Length: 285
Ligand SMILES: Nc1ncnc2c1ncn2[C@@H]1O[C@H](COP(=O)(O)OP(=O)(O)OP(=O)(O)O)[C@@H](O)[C@H]1O
Ligand SMILES: [Mg+2]
Image 1 (tube, rainbow, N blue to C red):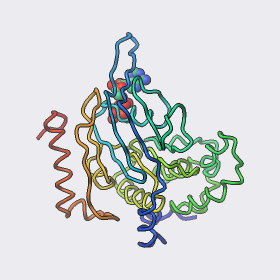
Image 2 (cartoon, rainbow, N blue to C red):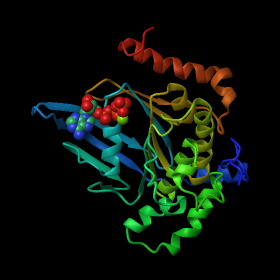
Image 3 (cartoon, rainbow, N blue to C red):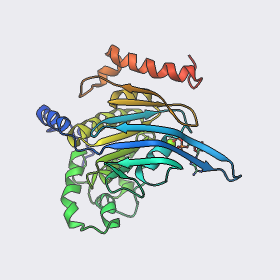
């Protein structure tokens, strides 16, 4: 079996009309953070204020990117939304319901693919279904469809060790999508990939989102990646994390690689973000 060529993922069969229909009728969850703070305790018993009084509304079906310096609380924000940790103060709300535990409408992709090496690709994708004690047979067809959409048709019986890093991360995305989550959380999902694979993955994620129409919160250190993907870009301050800039990225989709180098609007957005980081001393001018 041959490894799928770069560029095959989800680019086939996605018609413009389909894209327009999915963006007009988003299936995504509505997200609300109300005055949310998160304070951890260090081992010495000191308070570590990771997030400070964040209020935020995310519209259903929007693609929100979050950039900020290391340690500013990005993963904390994501863990709160996933229901993995509780806020110290404030409320996290998804589709009108307060998040109290791991949320069924939320899928998560981390920097490391976290695939179980002893399970096949298909068994990894179906893991959330098994954990929730749902009927595996009801989801198998969808798992195979997802694999096909990510250019991995025929790979269902392979083991993670037989795949490249980019392929494994695609499987991790399928696993996050298996239950059709209204909210997809991605925490630096391409941070460990080489530059070329990463470039392909951002195009593929854009396509996926245009088809699925779910709400996405995508965390990255890469300003170009954030501007390329986002409808809305949140720039966070150093700890304690607050939102320094809430920027609407108004560029038509699908965005192309050439936009990064040639579109003056793209350059303008990147400059705006860089200026904030330079003003805070995070980037040298
Ligand atoms: N379980 C924990 N206990 C104590 N402190 C924590 C804990 N988790 C995170 N922190 C601290 O909270 C702050 C925010 O951490 P977080 O992981 O959210 O940052 P981040 O923006 O995701 O960083 P990076 O870009 O490096 O991934 C950091 O100072 C971190 O040391
Ligand atoms: Mg992090």
